[in-house]
Each structure stands twice: as C-alpha cells, then as structure tokens.
Image (cartoon, rainbow, N blue to C red; front, top):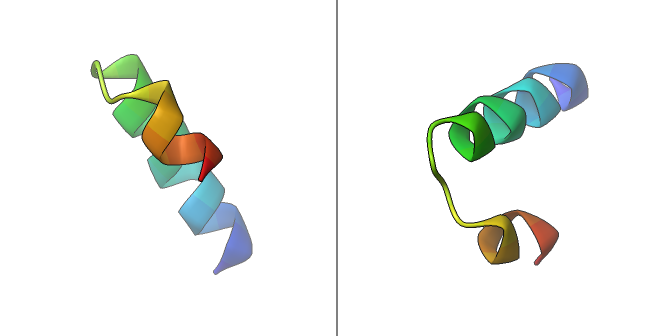
Length: 24
C-alpha cells in the first residue's frame, strides 16, 4: 500500500497537484 500511496502522489503532482501538499 506504501507504493500505491507514492504512485498516487506522483500522479497527482503530474496532474497539477500542489507540491506543497505532497511534502506535508
């Protein structure tokens, strides 16, 4: 599940998600 969480975070980032949200 850890990998899936990371994958989702990367996908969000590529879709224009805020990097700040991923860092927190």
